[in-house]
Image 1 (tube, rainbow over the protein chains, first blue to last red):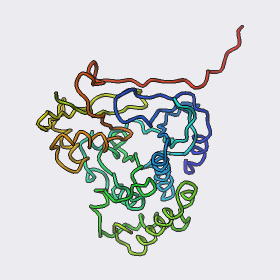
Image 2 (image 1 turned 90 degrees about the vertical axis):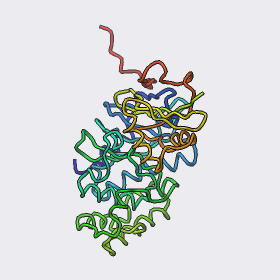
Image 3 (image 1 turned 45 degrees about the vertical axis):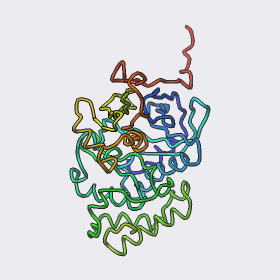
Length: 224
Length: 106
């Protein structure tokens, strides 16, 4: 499917038939599985306060930016919607769950273990998003064959900007491959497209400016 | 009494979570990683934190830093209150939201 918008629309509007939680067991007060009508399993991150709302927006922004770049094979479809929860209906980011996903930490692999093209794509996403938390627990492989990313809450739009990404660090001051520059052109040409529906204008302008700077400069730098 | 955090893999689609390792700090602040792949997880956790696992404060750091979709860490606790004291696995608790369509009686 070249155009994922129909899946986005379905995910955003279809009924939720079930929600489920892990009791006790660690760090999941704001996360729940939701079963979307038709059998789609997705993870909802609940926006229960200002910070969690920013992080939920950042999850959606990570997907929208990947899609704008034509790299939505790296980030699963993510939307912002209302979901039922134990405390009633709550706004949330809702992200389709990767099947057969193992993190880099589980696999014991580093950024050098994936194809260089994928490494460049992750590096660019991290620089544009100002991802302050790319670590071995939030990237990995699907069936040990496809690079896959999760957890984009710690970023500019999530209110925790920075740049902590070995993918980016390893490529600093390197020439950006032509195919990657072409993808960056899509961000500037569309002026970030639907990102403006989910993020503050100033943040989106920073992302677009950074993309334009990367294209014009031709090399990877921390601030584009 | 030594306290520890559990490092957990969350298999949301399978509806299960299981403990990968646990990180224990004794009263002197010595930190030990335990489990079947303790050495592997010490390396990975040090990479995630960005420093070595020294001092009891790393337990709280792990809880803060490791709170993702796939991997997470519990808050520090004593063995008697460990959620994995009886089994290495946990299961999702589901709440149906809607009733399935009813089939008319024949």
